Amino acid sequence: MRAEKATVTRKNLMVDEGKVKRLQHLVGAGTESEAVRIAIDRALAAEEAIKAFERLRKRGTWGKSIGV
Image (cartoon, rainbow, N blue to C red; front, side, top):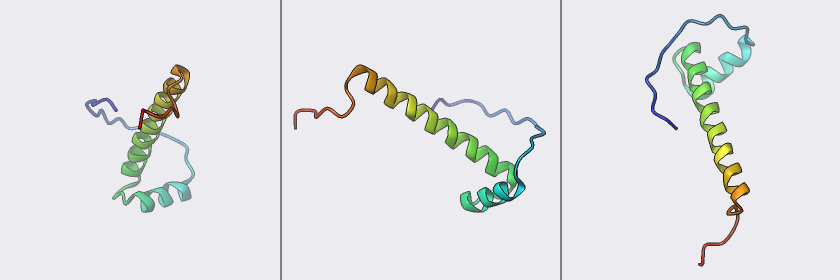
């Protein structure tokens, strides 16, 4: 994942309050905002991993043994 300087901006979002509270508890965040930031970071990391796997698959190197 790329190292980027965090820019925190206030946003007005419509979210399911129960899900945000559940997320906050699950990730151990002190605030709802922190929980949402953690979730965004994790979603971005997951998407980048998916893209990397797709590139490997397209190259034909996914799942091939490396001369063990």
